[in-house]
Image (cartoon, rainbow, N blue to C red; front, side, top):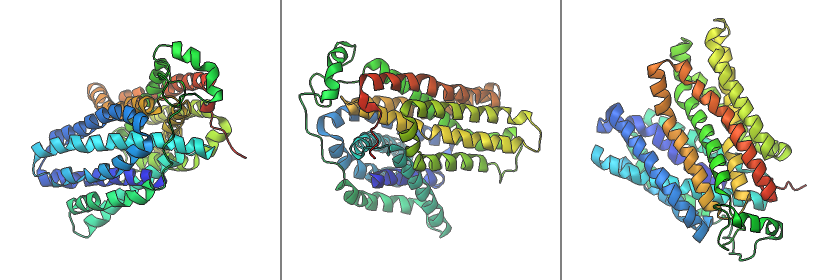
Length: 408
């Protein structure tokens, strides 16, 4: 599973790092490039919603077998697109490949975690970040040799699908269908079946998640993704525009956020094992909120410490937001029922936060200022805890497996 997450991140890193070269080759400009990114996100959102039922029907293993190699192969379309019109169409296909893989591998990851007996999903997401860094670094290296990024994208689209195969062979076997829920689920089955949206019609996995809980978890995922996207898109610009740092130093703000997030994702599973999912997401929301508050007050402190204040804030935000998605995905998967469908909805909620965040913050910044715009992710960082903790607590009450057992 680590290989799947690394390769998925690697493909995204190649794509993101190759965007400037793609823009130059097709002479896109900001507007048309922005529309391409929007089409990719739209394709991903649609495919996420479709993939959930497919995972429930055919198993996450089966969908992973197809989606992993496919998500790399469809990179060939945008890489070879001869013009904007073709790029727009192929961008949707590329986005759909990314969306299917996102849901399938995350669903499988919660199955791996439950079989493993202790938290591990955070490390998977940390590996995704490492894959993205590797893709970006390889692109930079190739460009230094004088080759075009298009060559690397084409090579990756041809080679990476085959690299997925040995990792696919190590995926967990598909879980057999069960007409009778496990003993620890039977007590709550009748209540879940009676709840709106509850139950699973006798299909495998025990009782399904109530739609109200899915919506609350989706809201927490939306808030976490938007707050994360705000840091990705605006940390460096905040340092340059608001704090007046040197252009060469401005990117350090994003680097600090990214390193903090990746480190905690790689090392954060023991924290959840010790604290439990509810306390972990409460702490995540608290740290992220405090981080954004430090960023917001940084322009008001003395010149000697304002940059350090902002950097500390971005580091705290990265530490807090690192565990949001792993905790939510783990809770959804451990609850049982139609995991694929519930996880696809929560994933789509979260992904939409990453999608609309830059546009909303850009509009607010244009109409007022960037510090005012950053109040939005600061508030939403608090929503992570306010919505996520009660939802996970309710899930743990109805489905005791939500708190992953820790084996001695």
